[in-house]
Image (cartoon, rainbow, N blue to C red):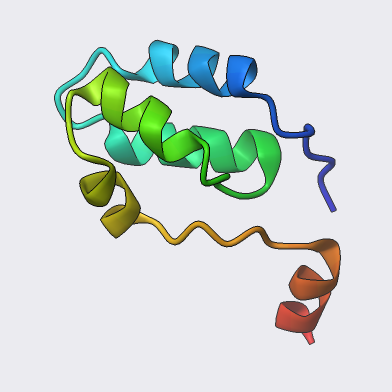
Length: 78
């Protein structure tokens, strides 16, 4: 199982900044954050919304903010 980084708003902002250059960047940003941390932290919503000049509701509507633990992942594989 991959090792994920501990949540960091600074690192999340770097991921957002690197992906926010294109018009349809919401999904790549969400995927990048999930790949880095293993989940989308609720604190990412406002950061993404601000960077993309959209609402938090739009960001939240595209992805559920539910941390997935190692135990959850094992249950899904069973």
